[in-house]
Length: 316
Ligand SMILES: Nc1ncnc2c1ncn2[C@@H]1O[C@H](COP(=O)(O)OP(=O)(O)O)[C@@H](O)[C@H]1O
Ligand SMILES: [Mg+2]
Image 1 (tube, rainbow, N blue to C red):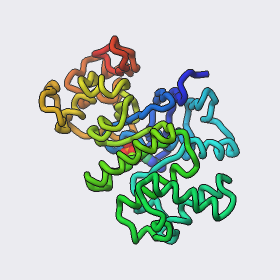
Image 2: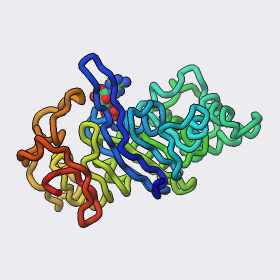
Image 3: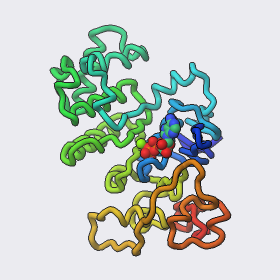
Image 4: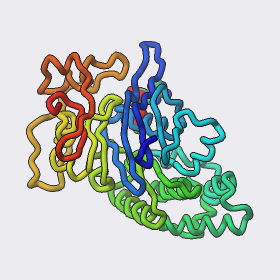
């Protein structure tokens, strides 16, 4: 049993490859409270998409536990996964590939409503679709459109409307705006925020973009090579990241606040392959503070005085 609304414990997802097991997600633990906006940040390839796909049970976990409202779902049966699909939905990164080009907006939105028995006849379905379109700042006449008749931003708003159609409690957003222009991005984030308030949703954002995570989340995690290296309140971590990887990652992005100075540290080298990961702390080959212990011992996430968790021997 866990007290958090969504709780992930030592969750791993390893893929079999010809070179050996690829540890895309390696013993990740995190907690999300109802109503939170959680942000997960990390470079491309660090395992963010795999983590949420495993939580959503689109991928079978290799090991670990997932609790939703205290119920273990990592081993849930196919039947109960169907019910979970209503509670947890996903918005994909690319609206261009996630919408079926042969389906009108109406059909795209009607499908989840009918499959889950949310509406049972054409009249109710249409009413609900108009409501969803309005929620995403679109009009009823968009119903008859095909994806190719819509802009990138409109497509992504349809994809979000589809994710909201089933009346989810939590929405996972996988780089929801990274394919879009900044102005369109801002508009969509505002619409998402309004929908969150109206429907009392919980959001789980993942992005490689620190400035996005800064804006949208109140709690966050920093991921590196399949592991969470720092977790806590977004404001606390953004003000002063502790983990050398987080420091380097934030340093690489200009902060909108010029008064904030982070210690000099730039990420050098490449992200190692998740097959044959480095011994001890997976960040040690790129870390300027590496000492003996870092090569030998895997650091665990330890709670610090200000409430954040850091997996680094410098802070243990
Ligand atoms: N189906 C798969 N089979 C093998 N390796 C995969 C598969 N899916 C993802 N990976 C690998 O897992 C790692 C994490 O990928 P991903 O979760 O997509 O990262 P992110 O979303 O942070 O960019 C990468 O090394 C990627 O190549
Ligand atoms: Mg991804």
